[in-house]
Length: 109
Image 1 (cartoon, rainbow, N blue to C red):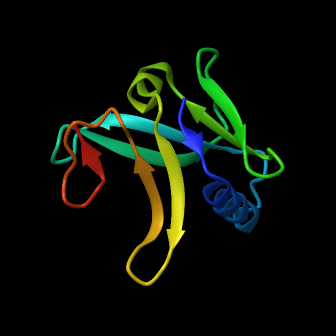
Image 2 (cartoon, one colour):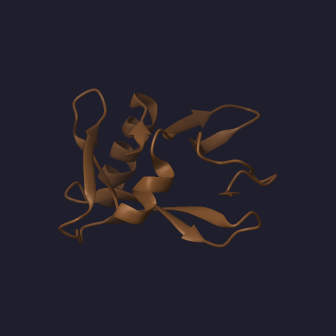
C-alpha cells in the first residue's frame, strides 16, 4: 500500500472539502501506458471493491486512500507527497519499484 505524507493528505482533504465530497476517497492506481510503460492515475472515488486495499492518512486520519490489488503490488513502498514551491508544485509519487522513469515523472517501468 502506498504511504501518503501529512502534507499530501492535507491537500487532498482541502480538495475534497472544496468539492463538497468529504465521503469520497482518493483512488491511486497504476495503468499500462505512458512513455515508460506504466502511468499513475489519481481520482476521487466512492465505488469500492471488496478486494481494494484501504488506508487512512493525515494528522487526523480523515483522508481515505484506496488502491486496487494489481496497483498495490506496483505501489508497495511508494510515497505520495505534495509540493508547493517555485520550482515544483503538485502531487508526486516516489516509487522504489520503478526501475526507470520518464522526464515528466508521470510514468515508469
